Length: 131
Image (cartoon, rainbow, N blue to C red; front, side, top):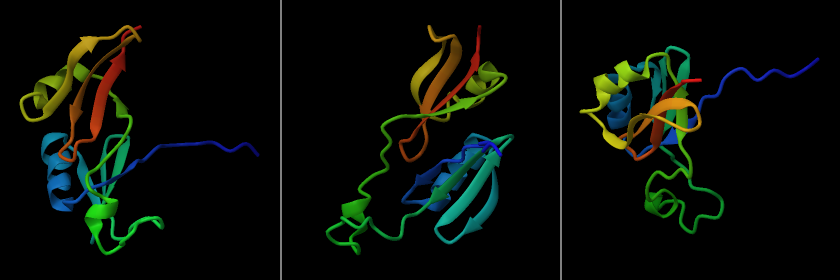
């Protein structure tokens, strides 16, 4: 039987769970599906994002009790691309409420998109096909 992958749900680290939940709920229109100590699951339409406050450092951390040594700030070498149907409407709804990385435009890779930073500094890109 063939394995079928169904969805992708990134887990993003944060230092302030409540502030991150507020950003995704109040600015991006997500719903909080579950909220436990140090963890929240958020969704909007078919998109799911999990947020966690890390409570243990990696094995190579010099001092696991020093949270700053293993989690000085959220880092991601790429971005999270979220496909949407009406990217222009989303742009109008949030552009004055967020830190913009790139304004909305048609791109050479046949997408119309824009990118923002969430409250932690993770880059979120919203776009749709223009082919």
